[in-house]
Image (cartoon, rainbow, N blue to C red; front, side):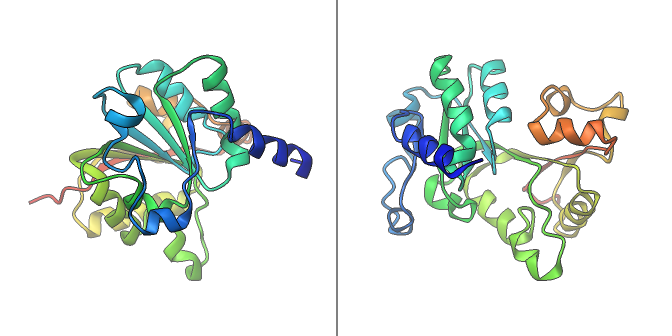
Length: 227
């Protein structure tokens, strides 16, 4: 994407009522206006909130919002030029149960209060394969602890990735922490028992992976310890 297009998208994001871009200073000061008030102050309903972390162009956020009008969906990404497309589509199509936040994912507990989120989707994140990048993997124990702070006790997390490494790494972490794994498969498009919610929408990159015959993996889990 050229720099002119990026600038245009950044400027247009400023005009979208469904785009929130809090400063890091505001979040760290724990003074973000919507924390704990998403239902009353933003969506103006009591519907459950679902997050997509690293939402990219927002394909999952938009699809899920259309299919589930009784839920509110929020896509989070640090790159506003990416989610511009999702924000634009939801504005033009008047999809009112969608929002996008420009923020780092590690600040999620400054964006939401305890038990404010019912589900989290993590779709095709960078697997951060190098050992020195372990702390940046979105399913490492530190990130799971952050998600636990905002999720309801029985809240679900969905990880969808083409990375067999991240799939295996995450399964190992979950088993080590004794977290319930509700479903896991290394090739969901070749498994008749795959949940419909995991296969009903394909992101831009997912379509490319499938053309290349790369298997898509999926894990659905919770953060309430067994036993």
